Amino acid sequence: MKLMNYKACVCNLCGTGCGQFLKTDGRKVFGVAPLIAHPVSKGKLCIRGWHANELLSTNERITTPLIRENGQLREASYEEAIALVVERMRQFDGAAGEIGILASARSSNEDSFALGRLAREVFGTTVRGIGAEAGHRKSMASLEHAFGYPGAHGSLTSIDKADYILVIGTDITRQNPVIGGNIHAAQRRGARVVTLSSSRTQIAKLSTKHFQQKPGTKGLLVNALAKALLAIRTANRERRANVDQMPGHTEYVASLRSISSVALERASGIRYEEIEEEAKFLEQAKSIVFLFSSGISGLDRPTIDAITNLALLTDRMDHEHSAVIPVAGISNLQGGFDMGVSGEPGNSVFKALAEPDSPIRALFVIDHDDGIIRDKERISKLDFVAYSCAYRNAFMDLAHVVFPLPAYNETDGTYTAADKRVQITRKNVDNPHGVLPGWALFQRLAVASGKAWGYQDAAGVFADIAAKVPGYADLSHELLGKGFGQHWNPKAFPNSRQRKFNAINIEYWESPTTPEFPFALMIGKAQHYWHQNNLMRKTIVPRREYDQTLWLYPQGYIEISPEDAANLKVRDKWLVNVCSSTGTCMKIAVKISPDVQNGTAYIPYFIKNMISDFLIPYENAYAAGEESVIPIKIQEA
Image (cartoon, rainbow, N blue to C red):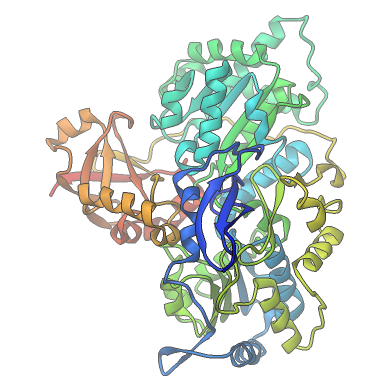
């Protein structure tokens, strides 16, 4: 009998990168505990993290390779499945765009790096992509332009010491609850916490000041704050800033001066006088942290540019407790970008699948466990689909070959959190089915295709990463195992000391609503059922909480304001018909909430398949992020 032990690891759900202890005897897992000494989570876990261990014991695991034969998936050996994939992939021309790779933002750096090699060296394709890449690419592009490298500036630990924290858009207590808790703790110790969001989120309720602007105007509001800050700077001649000579400053200032206070209030619902008052606090702060959501529910590029520009304009970004962090909702979204498995603009796998005339014929998919399968009809018509995942889900129905993958803690691997902190999780639990790690599977596919890679273990893969990926050169498994990880080095990028402003255009957003479709529908998150992701269905307590929500609202819910409910003559939990301008409709319950503004509505986009189906015609809307809204009408059912 093995003795019970507590093994340190990293939570593999959101991009916070919280520290955990796994209670295990090496074969089974009996629970988790928070890692008190961890610099970011500091002894805290969210409801998802407290139950992440249940993902190891679910009966929905894929335990063996599967091959589709006569319409049904049957068990197969690795040798047979690998041989079939190699044989079929040789029938397609990767260089001509016939093979696509869909990577996972939940894969380890080692798995993603090896997958990238497989795509380039074996399949010969550059048609690739990673879930949630559209939103995160915008964040990376804006940050690289402003700071010289594609990643967060500063650390999440800056929240603990910063004077001023500005949270733009993200419902962070739902998406990244531990970060939300740290922000609340900072507010209690005296930091000024300011939130910009169209709905009154939990972090907004806990903040010092909340600007509840109209949907689509966050960027305008951030630019107005920059204009007010610039006016204070101009009036205070003793306060000399070091940003005046940065490239793009002159053009940026000219754009800011074009903002009309009257047009600002009409578009956003916020008076410029309120912005001017807030700018005084911003000017007084010595250390400032900017936080915004990135990924599938991220902001649009103009809004992110407004944020990075304001950060530079404050002239506080050299302070040790200042930061600009795109907060990812998936564990290794940043790492996936670092490893190069995100698609290139104009050549992504999503673009290939969306265009009916594209040459794509085969797809190799990793861990795509979403409730909404984008381009499902197109994928079902491809000549060949190979799929790798730890859990059974709807994507298996589209696959010709399925490979199992280990769950977290069943293999060594590193993960890069939202603030560039690279952390290692060791193999703490045996996989009872002998499932190959992702990097080992990809290596076997390469070897079967005539390529010799020579990796012996995950540490060897990471050594290759350190040799080839900018910022990772000073890192190793051995070094990362000695503490709580390290941030990758931005100085590895040649422009890391050259800061410059992004070009902006001042636009006054106009709502797409019409008299026939008068409500602006916003899409967002819910605490216990998260990111379209089926992972939460496999954990007991989050699933129970989700089921309780459905017990109250069996058809799901749409949040509207009390005044709008009164005008519609509906009450809480009453069913209503929600229809969009494209003709898609759904029947759903009303949830009356004072947290949403009149004329707006809010739906967690992952409650019930009917909502997923309702949103499919609006893939571009939810892919574009939280600034997008859908015009709808609401009628009593």
